[in-house]
Structures are given as C-alpha cells and as structure tokens.
Length: 358
Image (spheres, helix red, strand yellow):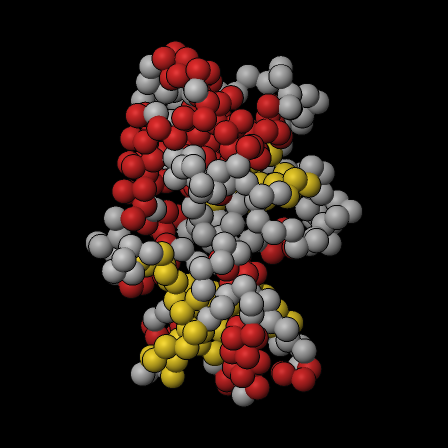
C-alpha cells in the first residue's frame, strides 16, 4: 500500500511557502493537543480542502501541535503516514510545541470549526463552516466537506490517510460502537479513491452488503494493525506515556476561590512531570479492563494549593463526585489520599475532557 506520495510533495511545498511568508495571511488548521491519528488526518485533509476548493487562495496549512520529538510516541501515526509515502523523518509537516503568540493577536480569528465532540458554543460569529456534530471520527466530517464539492479530485494518499483515521477511531466501523451514518458514508466514498488493495472487489462487496462493512477482511485487518500499534506501549516509560497523550485547558477561577489566576489542567501523573510542566492542576484518566473483560476507567486529580489556593481542591472534588455523568466512586490511593473510579456512561470521557468546574 506504500506509494510515491504526491501528498508528501504538496505538504513540503506548502510548508516552504508558509515559512517564506512568515505565516502572513495564512489559514492555520489545527487538531487537538493529543495529536492522535484523527486529529492529524483531519487537519491535513481540511488544509488541503481550503487550498483546493473553488476560488481558494491556496494559503492554508496544517499545524501539528505535537512536539516533533514526541511524534514518534504514536506508532499508529507513523504507520499511517508511511502508508501514504511520508517517511519517518516527516520533514513535510509543520510543527509547533504550542500556539504561537502571533495566533493570539486581536486581528487573528477562528474561521472554521469541524469537530465531533460536544459544542462549546464558541466562535459563533466567525466560523464558517462550523460543523459540530456527533461522529465516530472527525475525519468523516472533513471528508463530507470535501464530498460536497464534486469537482475536487482528492489525492489517493489523502483519501488513504482519512480512511485510516476513520477505521482506527471507529474500531473498524464496528456495529454497536462509535460509528454513525456519516462515518459509513465517508468510508464508502473514500475507498474507491484511496490506495486500497483490490479496491474493486472491496467496492463490490460494500455495494452488495453495506451493512457488513465491519466484517470485510481488509477492514478488520487494518483496524487490527492500527489498534495493535496504538496499544503497544510497554516500551514507553512514564514520561513517554504522559508526553504521548495529554490535553490542556485554561480557567479563570472566581474570586471566591483565588482571584482571577489562570490554572492549567493536563492529563497524566508523575511528580517529575508536574515539576517539569509547572502544573497547577493535574488530572489523569486511565482506561483498563476488569478480570471479566469489562472496560473500566479511573480518574485522578492533583492540585497545587500554593498556586490555586486551599479551597479549590474541595470545590473540584465535590464537583466531580456530584456529577451524574461520571458516577465516580472513591478508591484508596495512599500517597495522595484518594482517586475515583468512573462510571460507564458514554458521555463520561467528554465530561472529563471539558474539565468544567462549577
């Protein structure tokens, strides 16, 4: 499935032009901080769309927010990129450890949002398209935008990358899982345009029994390969695991807690990591399976009272325990006091990731 990539040449050309222009008048497309395959493919896909849609000015580029040195921690990303002809040195991609201060200037605005998480009600007056709706994969929503312009000819490598993102995020479009209608529509549209082995026979099988897409051998094989690479973490140390997957939020705390001091919230747990990142509040959400094979989660928060004040920990813990969605139960954790076992509601992860404190 490896190809000589026109996508690689396009990305390198855009990067060269962007750096030559110092980013002036460019649209920067970003995924979330975690840098998973869905975010990677979606940002590259939407940047390509903005550069190629009718009347496009071609000034759009995907910004990879994962630090370059951390990119190797996601083997599934490297595998998907290699499938589309982008080598391990990944020189085609534009990196930045954090959002550059330039992008926070008053004349910089959010012009588009495509997301499959809960709508936070932001950028209602500037973003168009503003497509926020449930989907197994954000790449499916990006694909639908591209599909809405029939004259666009998506490169096979980009179609393949988006296809990989949909497969890994929906666990092979597994029935009863995360996949919804838009995921199946995007997948079906991408297959004949992607570098898929024996795509002709695969298309015929999908046409005959579209409801059995999850049962197709190629889909199952790709899902298994991607998931195996994603979950092969035994060689990573604690710091690597923390670097691999975390998100950050900024809150202005009310004066009843501690003035208007902003506090950072990041996922992960390590004393060294707390010191290294200078964190105020640290949260970790873990996923595992019980002896019976049932999915379980544990949630832990560590608060630096010197930064956030003595009242915040109680407000935080009371809010978590009061959440009907999280349904937490305290469990012993000697060193820090306690942590919480999270209920099994489908909304629980989004609730944690929003990190809202009442």
